[in-house]
Length: 303
Image (cartoon, rainbow, N blue to C red; front, side, top):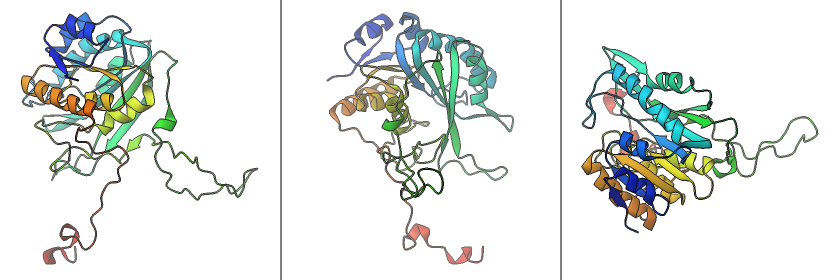
């Protein structure tokens, strides 16, 4: 099926009933056309206001003011029992780091409709190397629900047990296997999803691309049948690809024409089952001692 990009927000909203849609324009225009209680899950990563190619600001104050404006709209369009998943990192300002998740939490927690569920620490091995501080190797995803009642299907996102042969050592089940045969809860520190750098199979022309598996785990756990997933800062369509791979509807917004075209192609590939993806649950490869990258050069010895 062809993935269409619409420039009229009302058309995108109308068409999403029947098909996956992309809105080529400002997300605020799309939000204005969206009715209340419309979206099941929002998963997004907003601009950090760090002066990237797709950003016009380097100010954390702009990040704050932007979120004061957009978050009430995100709450409005979220269905009761629906989820808001906001993936952010850090803003660097005058040599200091600002944890952006604190800003997002501070804004959303003011709303009595919103319940905070988890702060997921997404940990990865590769990133910028620093000399005067410890290198940053994580970002966070804040998960909120609209209202106290929500659905969460843990069995769909369980991961393999670390000690599958572990047995109870006391009580009425002493000596019996204690682990769930379906696997364990992945917890709130996710170190099994590498970030998209270098030769990652999903790498495209975007400086801050996140892997499909990141939203995919949330979508599996939080989305029921015929759910609508929304991403107001779609970029190259990672959230959309995750939604389509999980047979959910998707609505995304993106200003940059080049990203819209990449996302259209990518979402079409996701529908066809041909999109390039590092599968959720794929083990992270560790170099063998015999590999060249694992062998210690002579001038490293003794260190």
